[in-house]
Length: 342
Image (cartoon, rainbow, N blue to C red):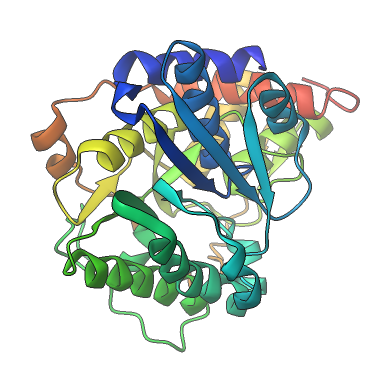
């Protein structure tokens, strides 16, 4: 396993008691994505430390090197399947615990593929819940995008957004809302189905060419020596390092009692502030235009309240933004080693 991914997985394993999974079959969808990779790495490390669990890792596209190395070192069943294709869902295997992480987390992708985005969050969510063994547990990765249009900040789990189906990001927003509704419908039948509204997660585990702002800033600094922003970068986001997100998700999946939780960190920054932090770490100048041109439909301020999680699981210590950025930069150096100038 890559040393950076292993270090993050070890941090998760120190915080989560994976013995709860002994004898279980665990399905992780979207296992090659950022969060899915973190979940897979921590579960594999826990199994190597004594937890007896069968692992099924669903993926749609080619398996990246970092996941291929994890799979080669551990007995993981790879399941290549397009969850946006309803016909393929009949092939879903039975499982005791499912963490549904599949989907298009990058705005450029989910706005380009709205129909597939809706299917992954709705049709596939229902199909996985149907494949769940009696007494099983299910965790749906929702998003803070469900709060879109809500001017309040910070946002609580009882809040909801005000956008309509004509919104340019509605495929993602409404897909996540409907996925949560499906979970709650099964919950009324006695199924342990929960939703986690995940805020911006970053860190090691991405592929090259990732189009999320934080990764693009690092790529530009490494490959061109400068960060040239497209707008004034006034939108605010709260960032959560991937091992913190993964730890919170495992705890919710295994022991959460509430139907929905906010999952996120403590580090809030505008895009411009984030670019300057990355620029300082890589000694790369940052060019910020005066024009403020938000991406169509993107929320201006996303800050969430995680008190519900902390009331149930206790106060959490988070990886600082600067430490998380350093680890992410180290990771992306390996992705762009041939063209890195940092």
